[in-house]
Length: 105
Image 1: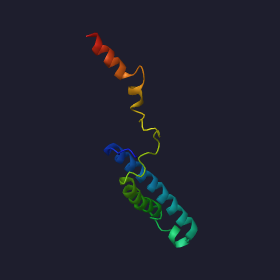
Image 2: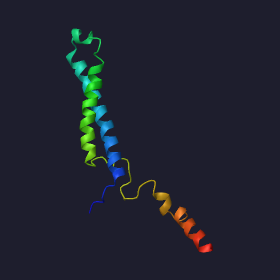
Image 3: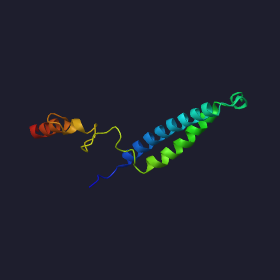
Image 4: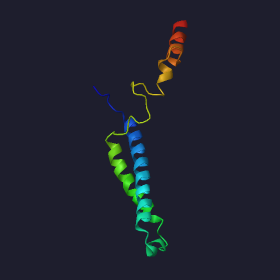
């Protein structure tokens, strides 16, 4: 059974999807300019805007794909324990110290 995603997981997925989409679009825009190799196009003053706008367009696709939670598990542990929760579950972590402090009172 898959674990449920929290709103923070969806936000993380949207950020990763947007970044990946922008980089893919930027690469496609640069490849487009290199492939066309048109002198009138290359002399156009706003030629640098082509890869940037292409990157923004693909970033929107990444935003949509990321909103589904597709990238929520990228860069995270596979056993379900998040990095920020790991110290709390350790033997000498915050939870153990809090429990020990409560027992002393």
